[in-house]
Image (tube, each protein chain N blue to C red):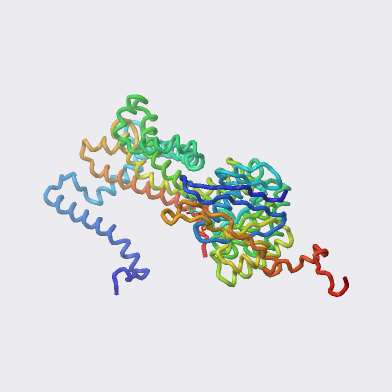
Length: 270
Length: 260
Ligand SMILES: Nc1ncnc2c1ncn2[C@@H]1O[C@H](COP(=O)(O)OP(=O)(O)OP(=O)(O)O)[C@@H](O)[C@H]1O
Ligand SMILES: [Mg+2]
C-alpha cells in the first residue's frame, strides 16, 4: 500500500502527536544531565527541576524592592502593546482592504502603494521609529502596526476581490447601496478572513514586539529576556520563552474558537 | 413603443467586437429564450440588459425610460452559480431582497416582522420552508437556484434575467425547475430573458427564441466580427406559428368556396 494511504488509528495518532514533544524534552534532559555531570555550575542547560523551581518563583514571588511580581507586570505590558498593535493593524487593514477591494478609485490609488510598502523590512525602520516616536509605548505599537498592516491589507483586499462578482451584482439588483454592499455582503464574508489573518500575523507581531522591547524598554517579556541574558540566566529565559509560547497558543486557540462560533455558515455544506 | 427596446446595440472588449447591431423589441410579459454558440456573447447581452455594462453604441431602454447605467431593482437576475449570499440563512436571503433597499441594509421592528412573514410565504411557495434556517451551502443545486429565483422575485423586478439558471442541474431537477418557473411566470406575468444551452428548454419555456450568431465571418481573423441576433423564432403554441392568427385577424380567413 502507498504511504499516503496509511492512516493512523486514534490512539496511534495521539501517540504520534505527543512524540515530538517528548523527544525534545528527553533530549534536553539528557543534554542537561551530561553537562551538569561535567560541571555542576554549568548555566547553559539548567536541569528541568531547576527550571520548574525558577518558574514557580517567577510566577509567585514579588520583587524584593517593590513587591511586584515582575513576570505578571511584563506579561501585562507586552500583551497591551500586542493588543493595541494588532487591534490598530486589524482595523486599518480591514478598512483599507475593503476600500481597495470594492472601490475602483481607491484600488488604483492604493494597491500599488500598499504592495511596495509591504516590501519594506519593518525592523529596519525601528531606529526611525525610536527617533520619531521616542522610546515609549508608541514606537513599539507602531512597529507592530507597520510590520503587519500592509500584508493583512493585501490579503483582505484580495479576499474582497475574490467575492464572486455575481454576488455584488445581485446585491445591486436588490437595491443595495455601496454602503449596504459593504456592510451586508462584503464585511460579513471578510470577517472570518480577518480573524484568520490576525492568527497568521500574531507570529510576526510577537517578533516585532520582542525586538522592540529588547532594544529599548523598561518592562515587558522581551525586555526581561534580554536583560537576564547578561547573567546567563537560562532558567529565567526558558521560563519566559515557554510562557510566551503558551500565551501565543492560547490566543490562537481563542481566535479559532471565536471564528468557529461566530461564523457557522463557513462550515455549512452538504 | 415596446416594453424592452434594444436599439442598434454594439459591444466590444479591447477593440474586439463581441456583439454587433443587436435590435430587438420585447413586449411586457414575454419570455425570451436566448441560445447561441459558447462565447458568442449571450452573457454579454444579458449583462447589458442588466446594466452591469453599457454598450459601446446603441441603447437599451425599459418601458421607455432612460438607459440605465448600473444594476438596480427593476432588473432581477439569477446566475448559474453564486446568486445567493452564503453567509445568510435561506430565510435571511429572502428578507435581504427587501432589506437591502433600505439605507441601513436592515429592516427593523414591525417592518421586519412583516417581511419575515412574506419571506416565509415565499419559502412555502418555492418549497424551501423546511430549510429556512439553514445556510445555502447545505442545499442541493436545485434548491439553491429556487432560492435565487425566489430572492430575485421578492424584489419585484420588472424584468427577470436568467443566465443558464439550470445549467448545473441534473435532468430530473431541471424538469421540476421548468414547472416551477412556468407556474411563477403565470402568477407574476413578468418579462423574462433566459440564456440556455438547451434548445429544447428554450423552446419549451420561451415565447420567443433568439439565436445569436455571427453573420460576418473573416477567415483570416475569426474574432474580428461580433455576433448578432440571426433568428427570432416564435415558440408559442409548441413552436408552430400562425395557428391562431385567424382568431386575431378574422378578415384573413379565405372566402368560403362557392359563396361568391
Ligand atoms: N469583461 C470582458 N473583457 C474582455 N472580454 C470579455 C469580457 N467578457 C466577455 N468577454 C469575451 O466576450 C466573448 C463573449 O462572452 P460571453 O460570456 O458573453 O459568451 P457566452 O455566449 O455567454 O458564452 P457561454 O455560452 O460560454 O456562457 C468571449 O469571447 C469572452 O472571452
Ligand atoms: Mg455565458
